[in-house]
Length: 316
Image (cartoon, rainbow, N blue to C red):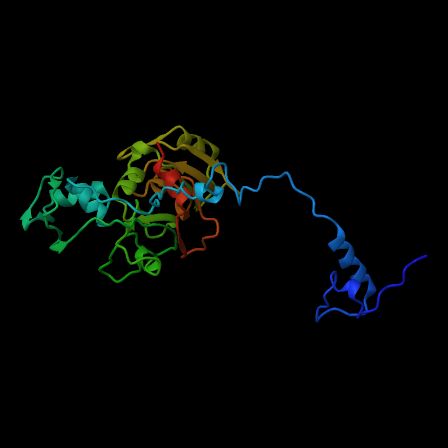
């Protein structure tokens, strides 16, 4: 014969069930469920709990905490070297590239302890006061790398005596560091331009021996003849020497040309086409090494990512 459920105030249920304020005191399902749960014996687990007990006497968590990650400086920080060569010192101060720094030293624009120093290989000592054009300069520990999509009618220089816009006008909101352009784009050429205060980095990317490739999209005043395309492909001889190209192809039509080069002489792309009687009406640098214009509208700029910096620094 089935036993009737005990009433609320009967003692047998009191050891299994304690009413909660949020529960219905007349819910018999809850009564039986809780009572049954209390009756069931707890199973003994054979699992080891490494949170409570480690491999030895101490807790496992304590053992793990001994191993700390070694902190590595980011790609944007650089130690200031002792006994740095003078041209490198000037470049690391964000004045210009190392090659340009050598020119400034030869032209007598750099002094060490108020004495003009013409020796670019001079090793700067800790107590030395180095000046460029009568202004004290020091290497920076903070390296900045910015990619700009340069607009038309903008000068690739730090200052313009005629008050025209320079590339620095488009990046001044990103950094207060003294930065300068890597290479140059002429006033009417648009597209990718790197700016940095890392002299070694700029020197490497600017020097032709490193073969940094640039891709341009050129729009001509008239259709480029196939035989002229082949002449460019086979290397033209310009007034200042040969002008090798790495690749050249037609674009959407025979007036639009894609050209890839690694040489960096002044107005080289324009002069290649002018040599054959063509005028470049529009020139845009669409790729610089591994960098593209993706997500950078004209006149806008961004910092390079750490990965991009690493890739550029390992170019050979």
